[in-house]
Length: 60
Image 1 (cartoon, one colour):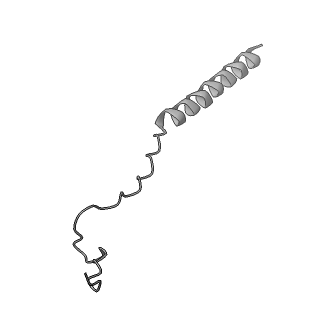
Image 2 (cartoon, rainbow, N blue to C red):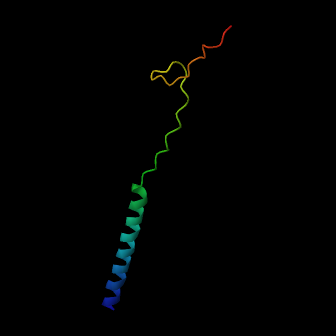
Image 3 (cartoon, rainbow, N blue to C red):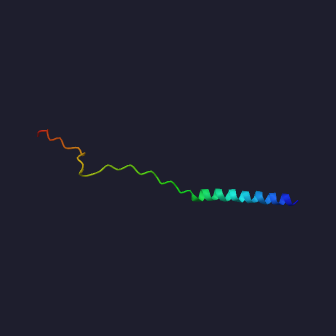
């Protein structure tokens, strides 16, 4: 009888250890940050010269 009692205690202890590990795993997971949003088009003057230049060859 004593062997069955020890065996059931070990099974219960293992169950609680596994359940605690699973809970700790899900609690410790951090939510993933959202991907960065696409950069909106820049308005105004460009500092690197990539802005389109007006066509000055048109005569009035």
